[in-house]
Each structure stands twice: as C-alpha cells, then as structure tokens.
Image 1 (cartoon, helix red, strand yellow):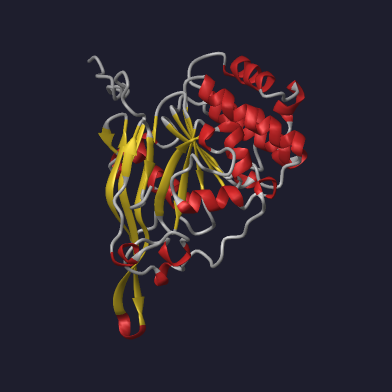
Image 2: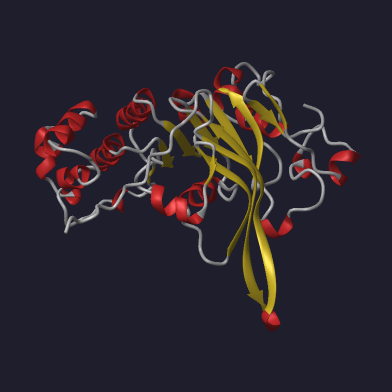
Length: 323
C-alpha cells in the first residue's frame, strides 16, 4: 500500500506594496488579583501602532516601561496566560492568531534576543547556526554566513562560553541571516558594546535588511537607531506617539512633530543636553487625556481631557492635537 505523504503548508506570500507587518491600535493588559481576591486589569499598552515593509528597518525607541519589549512578545506570541490583547497584528496581510504565531515563530519570524546567553551553552556555534538552515550543504552555507559577518572559520567549533560578547552577538546575527525568516526582531542587541563591536553589529543588522528581510530594531539608544533605521517609532507609556523618518532628526528637531520626540532629541549632549522635567508615568498613574500632557510644554486644557487620535501621512504618524 502506498503511504500518503503529509502535505506541507504553503508559505505565506506577500503581495506587492503590502506591509510585511502591521500593528494597529494594539492594547495589552494583565489580569491580576489584589486584596480580597479582587480581579483587576493592569493596562500596560494602550495604543501601539507600527508598520514595516521588507528591506526596511524600523527602530523602536523609548524609556524602560514604554512597551518596546512587550511589542516583541506580542508579535511572537510569547505573552503569559494572564495577558489580554486587543487590536490588530497582521503579518503578510493576515491576522497573527496564536496558532499561526506558533507555526511562524522561528521559521518566518525570528528574534535576536537581548541576552548573549540565548545560545545553547552545550552546542558548538556552527551546529547551532546549521540547525536553522534548510536544504543541503548546511555546513558550507553556515561557513559562508560566518565569513559574511566576520567570524573566523574556527568559530564553528567553539562553544559560546569560549567567545567574546561581540562574537556571540555575531553568531546570533548569523543565525537570523541563516534562517528563512522574513521578519527579524532585534531586541536591544547593542548595549554595552565597544565602538568597534557596535559598528559591526549595526552593519550585520543592515545586511539582514539588504537580504530582503524586514527588521524591528528595539533600543534605548537614539544615536544608534539613526545609524541603522529608515524610520523611528517613538514609544511613551505604552503608546506610539510618533513615527518619523530618520532625516527628520536634525537641527533643533524642528521637523519632528511630537513634543516628546523633540525633547528626546534635544536631550542628547550634542543637541544642547536640555533636560525634560518629570518622568514617564507608572502604569497605575496614567490619567485621562494625553499621556504626555503632565510634562508637555505646549499643553492646553483639551490635552488634559481627551486623548488625541493618531494622524498618518506618507509613512509617518503622530499622536498630538497640535502637531
């Protein structure tokens, strides 16, 4: 009797001019139990928006607690069971359901994690990269990718603990280059790197986009973001407040549209080192109205009473009444 082979699912195809990834009006809360076993919802993201195309790098910047890494977890489907998600996440024009996330994770959607400990400490680096390569001649393909990212051939036989932090980050980048993933999420891949290693890492991530992948580059570092990205998405207290083209970050920020983005730009040492009074609100402190209004230099009574809707044009976005 002839055995019937299991049919492999057809790959998702991206139509011309269609976004690779589209996140619209994303909200996230965590269900918690407080005193007296009262059930409450702690909202950590209220209105996140981001659009990414193939061969494009979008940097996501913002302070700790602004929602950057939570966005990555939401896309990958790695949120805890008490998470409640609303809004839209589309990948190649189709909703990212939990079932689809599980199927695509590690295949069409790949993560470059923050921690250099993400590699298996008991497996040689060459074998780890070969594990994500499809087809034949895996060792030859792996070595070609190592050459591309500047890793010596002997690195293949090394364990992660035998490599420097910079070399481990190159192995992580090589893993993403070797994978068939179209979407790469790089979650804080550059902190603590010396200038040489930082420049190399930026170049590796640029190579990912040049090879046809779309990249979300999550970082605290605006200067690095401007070296690598096509656009910058600015997060504040769980909202996307602006998406701006890299060329808008110049002068005194006159081409930037949101007051928070301008304040971030002008707080850099080379731009006057102007401090922004106050701090980002805690999750439990987010009040009615615009989330930035307590710190905003141009706020009005309207900003205290009502949240502004997002305004989009030519691939850019801003959430401000007076932008």
